[in-house]
Each structure stands twice: as C-alpha cells, then as structure tokens.
Length: 163
Image (cartoon, rainbow, N blue to C red; front, side):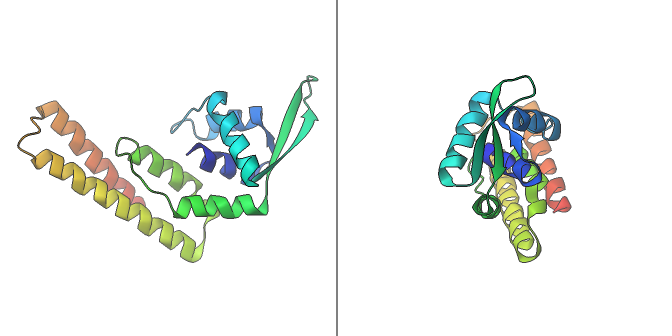
C-alpha cells in the first residue's frame, strides 16, 4: 500500500522523501504510519520502474535531498495498482480498502466503476469467510471473539455502502 500512497501524493505534489513521509503522516494518519525504512525502498522501486523521477536538490537547511515527481507512466501504474488490488490478507483488508478508497479520486468513469466492483467483491468475500468462521463448530470462539468478528463484518458492510 505504501507504493499506492507515495504515487498518490506525488500526483498532487512534487516532494522530497522527507516531505512524502510528512504528508503521509498528515494525510493518511488514520490508516498508516510507515517509517522512512519502508518509504525509501518503495521510492527506489518506483524510480527503478520509471514511475518516479528524482533529482538531487538542497534543502533550505543546506542538506542534500532528492526531489521526487511522478512520471506519466507512474500515473498509469497507480491506476493499475488500484484497479488490480488483491486483498489476500484478511487481517488488513479493511484498512487497505480505506487507503485505496482514499486514493481512488485518480480514477474516473469506467475505471472507477471497475474499482468499486473489485472493492465490493473483496469485501463480500471477506464477509462470507468471516461468517463461515463464526459458523464453524470447531473454532471454539469466545463471546468476545465472536463480537469482534461481527464488528468487522459490520464495518465491511458500512464500507460497501459508501462504495
């Protein structure tokens, strides 16, 4: 998800790595807080893919830094990432869905409809798997665990209503 967020930020602003980190903290504070140890490798991958161009610059404090900007290929790549999202980890599906929805304003028309359909399909599958787990007589879930799973199902349904 960090690549999606980085590209999304660069669609809006040219920024240094430090500024990208700061914007992530401000804009996506409710969803993620990646460290520079996560951001730097993601930016290097995106540079190597041709999604980002980086030029050396000097900060106001006299420190060397890299100014990053998104390329036309990077914009297409971001759209492709959003359209082809696969939510393989149930533990992260709700948060990753929120991040993707937050960044989805780069899509329009048929792309947006395809994106929404993918989100709904993934959340529907998540709900079905969660209900199966609740109905499994061998799971031995406590009342608290059942309430937690049910709250996640309700959360997924609320997100589907937004979409």
